[in-house]
Length: 270
Image 1 (tube, rainbow, N blue to C red):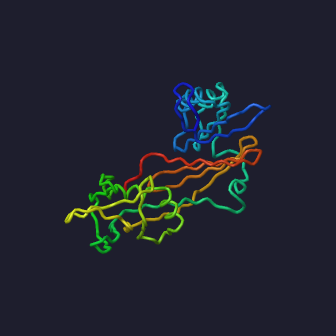
Image 2: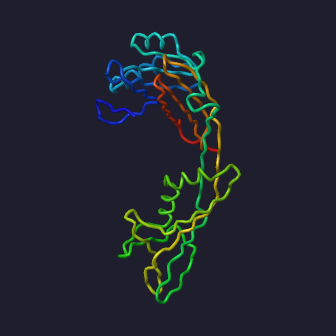
């Protein structure tokens, strides 16, 4: 991400290579195009306008299908380097990720099919576990509504911690998941409560148990590679959760490695 000098917003760039020349900082930006159609002059001009407002010192455009003669000539006049991923030099791709390594993408989708809540015992009530509906409410100790339990479950399932755990443990043949949150807490580490209707009383939640169907996918990126001067570049494409996904990795002359993953378009409907 680079800052737009005109608007102050952060703009996405496929690959940024930062270094120094003569003690001065230098940013080389690489923009990638993975289309079936040859890149035309319009794409070159769009990227030229974009990077005129970014701190890019040198711009490189890559196109798997190549460029029209006009696009290459206009890029040359602008001082933009172009190359096609079909006709570049061979590079040591293995060194970008490690000897004899391959690049794989792992994704997971889960859906809460059933949620149960266990509440702690009180003076006149024993500990109990009940099935809940998505619209059941969660409260603070003061009796203030926090949210519906369906919202809480969705936030939990989409959290980085849960995502990392599922990706670490899940395999292609796993079609069901179960998850315990014990004890559940709000963002201030305070306990959460459910309200008993008759008699009306707040019950502290001991555990939230979530279960439902899951789908794990492990896809291999088919990689290509090349060189831009002293910078090694590797790229690959696969499909993750119905979206075309492209990865670009670089290693510069100092051995610094960087990788960017880009999702294209909306998920495909099955």
